[in-house]
Image (cartoon, rainbow, N blue to C red; front, side, top):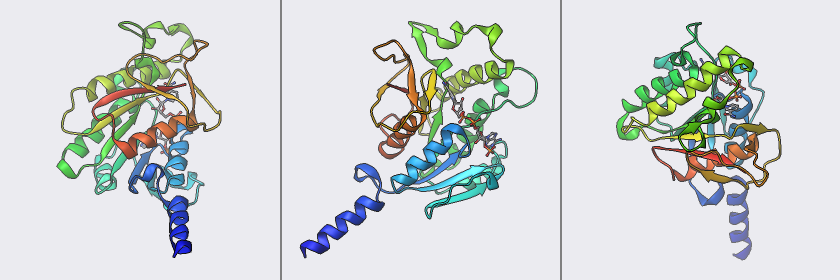
Length: 244
Ligand SMILES: NC(=O)c1ccc[n+]([C@@H]2O[C@H](COP(=O)([O-])OP(=O)(O)OC[C@H]3O[C@@H](n4cnc5c(N)ncnc54)[C@H](OP(=O)(O)O)[C@@H]3O)[C@@H](O)[C@H]2O)c1
């Protein structure tokens, strides 16, 4: 009997999500990206089912029995509605600028927020939660002053500036949304390729600094924070920031 119990515990530890949380069905937009690929790996490692979305699914080399890869484009609302239906959590970790208007509204991060909120609000109580990977330009570096306002504009490519402003617009947009369970998860200024440590801090609107004044986090640890939020839903309709 003792052997059977130990075998069951081992099986749960080997296959189940961390922290004893239930297995989730998670959609990841941006699964082929630098950040999204870590999120997919972290979610799979914790035993969740992941639907990885890409406009060119053949790009995704990862293979796993709990991974489904589908073709999808965030700009196609019909496909978005179909892909997210019946899932528990949708994670959006994308970047891009559509057209050449130069307006923050043309940042994919903002357009994605509008399209996903529209699709999810139509699904009522059955709608999945939405986790948006935000931009550090929206963080306050001093009271009332965002990091975006401190950027040396002449050195920043126009497309990147549009994305930074688009991420701020997306946050302002979410803050008016009360019929979708969203969380805007903001990385620090510097993403690193460092290891997964599982040790980081979670804050709010202010940029978190480590003892040496740096605002940084590995992509692997950002993925831990994001999947923690997917599992625990501790920050509904809030913006959080994550850093060492
Ligand atoms: N310090 C910071 O604040 C900071 C630093 C880096 C990144 N970020 C944020 O992190 C997020 C991810 O950045 P990243 O560096 O991982 O980007 P990335 O490596 O350039 O990946 C971009 C992703 O966007 C997806 N994508 C583009 N257009 C799409 C569309 N129309 N429909 C669906 N997916 C689309 C791409 O998927 P396919 O090509 O496979 O379709 C790709 O996986 C962004 O929100 C970015 O603003 C923040």
